[in-house]
Structures are given as C-alpha cells and as structure tokens.
Image (cartoon, rainbow, N blue to C red; front, side):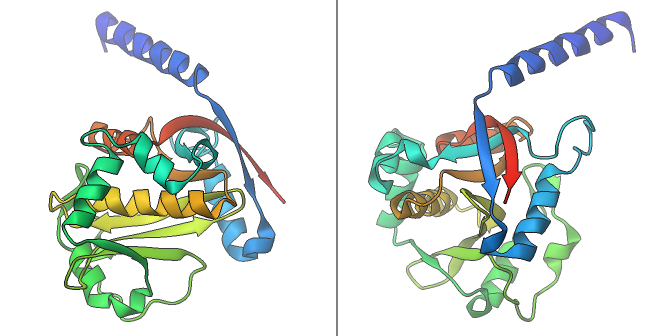
Length: 235
C-alpha cells in the first residue's frame, strides 16, 4: 500500500468515526418472559463481538431502526412517506394492483416460498446461500411472526419473518420477487403500520444501515429506517 492509499484509508476511517459519533442512540430491551430460549439466543447473537471490529458488539453501531413512537398511527407513518418512490407511495400503488398483506402459516405456502427463495441466484450483489435452494417439507414453530404479500390470485410473492424480543421487533428473513410492483415496500410498511397501531413497541429493526450496500440502504431510507447506536439490556 502506497502513501496516497494509506492517507485515503485514514481519511475514510475519520469520516466514518465522525458519522458514528453523530448517530442518535437507542436503548433496546430484551425480555426473556416473552420466549426464554428465542430471546436468549437472539440477545447472544446481537451482542457478540463484531466479526470484523472485535472491540464493538455485533449489532450496536449503525443499526437500522424505525422509531415507532414518532407516528401517531400507521396512517401517519404512510403519510410521512408519501412522496414519490417512498414507502407510502409504493404501498398505495401495490394495493391498487391487487396485492394484500396477511399474517401467514408458512406451511400453507411451502411451494410458493421455495419458488421465491430460488427465483434469483444473487441478491444485493451477493450469491444466495445454498441453503435457500433446499425445499422445506414442513416448517416447525419458531416463535416468530410470519407475514406475506399475496397477489390477486392468492399466490405468495414476498414474505418476512419478524421477532418480538422486548420493546422492539426485528426482521429475520425477508425475500420476495423483484417485479417492480413495490411489494417489498408494501410488506415492510404494513408490518410497521401494524406495530405502530398496536402501540406496545418502541422500535422496528432491519439489520444494519451503515454496513448495507447502497441499494439496500436506499430501500431502508425510503421505509423510514435510520441508523442508530444501540445499547442493549436484558431482563
């Protein structure tokens, strides 16, 4: 590495440090009473050392959150994101095209899920994990909530698994067809609306924001996700 490359890397590190210092902070609370094994397992995952930066926790810096308390209702959330190409706009357009969102039993959609999982070889510039190629014969209960987007013929076109862990919920697996109809916006926006209207949680998490590729980061931005620094507790 020459001097100019070293200086550029140093400048990039300083820019990142300044960006991190400006991040808002959020306190996420795990509650074991909800589901002891699931909550303990997820807490360990979120607070283990980061795979690249061992001095910080795995999901503690630049985590993508929607502050659910910032919206009086799900309708207010959609209204705040009503501008063209944002979640409110895409949600309305997808519903006009006959798409609906429902909480699903995955065993009713085994073939649809397999078709979604194998519809692309790559997502967000990364090869799909080979595990997605295997067809699941039956799904066991896992403590998560499962939501799907159905087209006007009742076919599943997108799905997301959501865990509720305390004062926050977090997405787990999120997949769908890339069809240009905005179904992924509709799905996550509908989940956010449900949580806002339910009124019991403070935040919705969707992995990290700063570490996401530009396309995924832009998708999260248009859904109202923002990067935070996180402090976890468990009770």
